[in-house]
Amino acid sequence: MASIVALFLGWVLLFTQSGSGNALSLNYYEKTCPDVETVVTEAVKKAMAKDKTVPAALLRMHFHDCFIRGCDASVLLNSKGNNKAEKDGPPNLSLHAFYVIDNAKKEVEALCPGIVSCADILALAARDAVVLSGGPTWNVPKGRKDGRTSKASETKQLPAPTFNISQLQQSFSQRGLSMDDLVALSGGHTLGFSHCSSFKNRLHNFNATHDIDPTLHPSFAASLRNICPKNNNAKNAGATMDPSSTTFDNTYFKLILQGKSLFSSDQALLTTPKTKQLVSKFASSKDTFSKAFANSMIKMSSITGGQEVRKDCRVVN
Ligand code: HEM
Ligand SMILES: *[C@@H]1O[C@H](CO)[C@@H](O)[C@H](O)[C@H]1NC(C)=O
Ligand SMILES: *[C@@H]1O[C@H](CO)[C@@H](O)[C@H](O)[C@H]1NC(C)=O
Ligand SMILES: *[C@@H]1O[C@H](CO)[C@@H](O)[C@H](O)[C@H]1NC(C)=O
Image: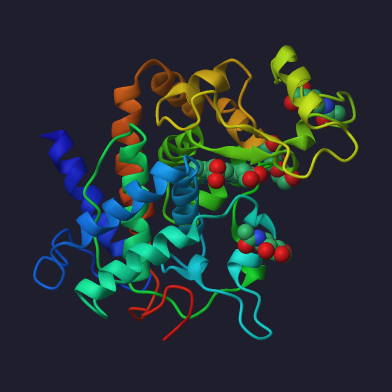
């Protein structure tokens, strides 16, 4: 009973938080584009078969989209004239695979022109990326609209890998997301790769008393310092988020407990009793993590913000 009430309240919250009030629903395209989900899934599958880094890229792209102006496909717009778009803003390292969304959109337009937003296609692709990597599935509420604005300067609003727990909490709560969501969604770091610049702060001149972040496991820190020396590491140098970086599992949480996660923001999840307890819970059960991740993804991907259904995901109508 309690869980039914909680579920109901969750849904109420979900739909009242939506930025500009586009009502999302599970059957949004049932009459107008019934095959959209199959088409998107096939596009993701096809891209993945050629490039194993595609799922991580799609998941991160959706997260960045939702954290700036809501999930309105602002991350997909190209810079134009004097306007530098989000994708050309500073923390764009490893944002890639935009072509996967372009291909999916092209096929969806051929089937049902002018109906499906780029923001919905990205939300579906992110879900598919997780499923096809061995993670949980969930039903994606649809009906997002695409925005008309994308500014590189607004990428400053994204959380940084150097953030401590209070900064992370603030960043998430500003978007209606809780500490539980923070821990679950950080589990997205079970996939993908990071460049040295994102975690170098922990390896050299960490703070006044420690050259290396003492919360890093010593041998792990040594191997990272090898990859990312103090002065000019190789251009694309970095490390995978976890040894199973193309499999969506709960290894990330086990690594945090061992001092083997990459970012200060990952390690920060151990610095409050509540978040530490969640990390331990997710480390000991993939199933518990999977359920929590799916719930929090629905919450994050329901922050809406746009006005139109773009014809081309890279330019406004
Ligand atoms: C909690 C705050 C977060 C911070 C501070 C953060 C920061 C970062 C940073 C710095 C990178 C590496 C960029 C690079 O050096 O190439 C990264 C990668 C990644 N992040 Fe996050 N992130 C956060 C939350 C999330 C969330 C909520 C998700 C998705 C649910 C996510 C998914 C990913 C993925 C999949 C990658 C790998 C991308 C790739 O390999 O192409 N992150 N993140
Ligand atoms: C990232 O931004 C820089 C400029 O800040 C730009 O030159 C580069 O093309 C961008 N990378 C991607 C993948 O969009
Ligand atoms: C987190 O960092 C901010 C900004 O540097 C600082 O004001 C705050 O006290 C820090 N919080 C914790 C818990 O360390
Ligand atoms: C440096 O960081 C460590 C680990 O977080 C901490 O225990 C120590 O107090 C910090 N030192 C200074 C001077 O901030």
